[in-house]
Length: 343
Ligand code: G3I
Image 1 (cartoon, rainbow, N blue to C red):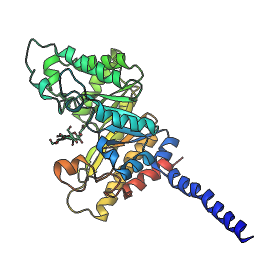
Image 2 (image 1 turned 30 degrees about the vertical axis):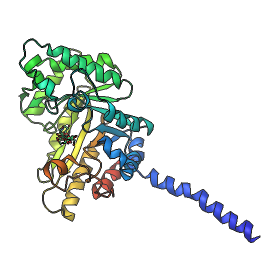
Image 3 (image 1 turned 45 degrees about the vertical axis):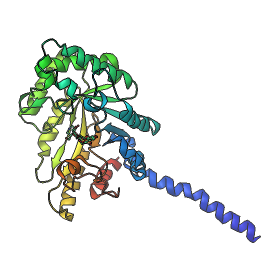
Image 4 (image 1 turned 45 degrees about the horizontal axis):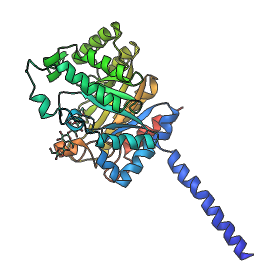
């Protein structure tokens, strides 16, 4: 009799274990983002996947991954006639295995370019269009059907004009139009974005981008959306009214908006008050994502404060991500979730 009762208790406990685990998982950002048809993403390096707690938090809480560096020219095309897809493949394989989407970052940027390319600068015998087309076709073909959206162009603008980048100087301003067309031809299903910083509010830079985009669309150049990076500093106030007005004008062009590289850096000692203020800005940004159907993704530039470019580059221990160095959710995480849970 006692044996039967004991077995019954064991069975009861085990059968509920899954519910307890399920319940935990069900309360993730990923869960609520899915219900809201929002992509909740983060930028990662392939080496970070070897950190068990990192990988667990990543696949539990997020449904969208951006390779932070491994798809940039300097990493994927460091030798002229050779491509190194290993690091980026690790990230893409992890994402597909865990039913997550991938944002390709980035096919064209003026930073992280390999020596062999920079050495060709001003060499009039070189056909730079061929070099750029060869890179785009090779990389996009390799990730065809695996990359959901591409940052085709990253940070091409300066204030109210084109940044005089390597490609601008060696091909001309229509390198943007050509790159969008080459990318679309190689993977017609991938969504194509122009990604930039300091364009989040209405200002001369976002005005210039608006005119550029309007012009591209009037020529039926394939373009699906704009990436607003949102690298913010806690003490630089963001005019949310101007951000919303800016979002609306780009949406009215039939484009999508993605928040692509969100972090809210805090200076000095991290206080409750600063964490509150940081969480409030995250909340306000998520309110905009939730409010507009065509604002379709929210990506933080790093998963936890343990791994942030701000820590690596500026030695500032407060990069302002939503998980702390031990992968514990910060106040910002709960504020984002609060909005994602809303009907
Ligand atoms: O991997 C090499 C390592 O082998 C080498 O020993 C080490 C020392 O030089 O460098 C390592 O590469 C560094 C890489 O980050 C990986 O840590 C590069 O030097 C460093 O320049 C690179 O910085 C990245 C930066 O873009 C430039 O590519 C940051 O991690 C990355 O967060 C940052 O991200 C950019 C977005 O792409 C575009 N928007 C702004 C954002 C922040 O700057």
